[in-house]
Image (cartoon, rainbow, N blue to C red; front, side, top):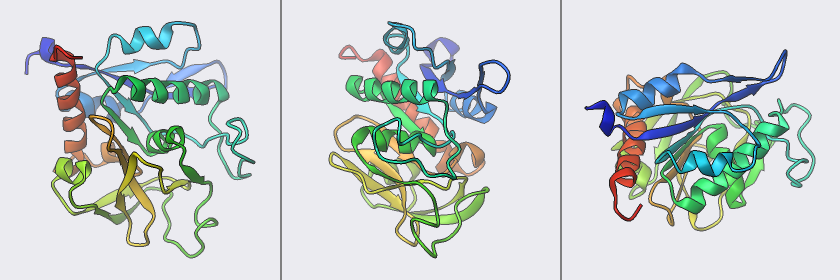
Length: 241
């Protein structure tokens, strides 16, 4: 594929504040976007006026990557669980605004883990803050464990991945508990936990709770990034975009 035909995909990263503020991004996300035919554009959580709109004017797709936990109290959603590893407030506020604007613009977006939860929270979903405490007796989901996921027939996710069941790699202790319309749950684990969501109102707005960037050798996972890039390419070269 010619480089000048590759659409630009904005990719958010972690904000590290241990010494001085730094942006950190797992290289596998960028590698996945490039392998799928896009140009990854790492973005910093800047709060300057006009930055976000100027950024979104220049990209045609967004990847919301994994991260830490949400400060629910700062969002006005009740107390934050004491075992939460809280995302820096500057990043959380930026990410919430980013997700809202991406959906308002109907830009193709893929959310991974924290990124899926971010899409759900913006839509008004409820967050389970600590597993297995919020679902006693459920299987472990933290630490990179592998388990199966059942994909809903007829969903965009099923059409994209081309499978009805898929093994996934999980690194989370928080999860969404249902999502409001126009969002639907498009995958669950065998215990019914939400593993993927998608919007029925947007051209491509999909979130997965697992880490497809850690399983690119398996074609179904790579197809998630390929579809994001394909949708972004259509946005870039559509006269209606």
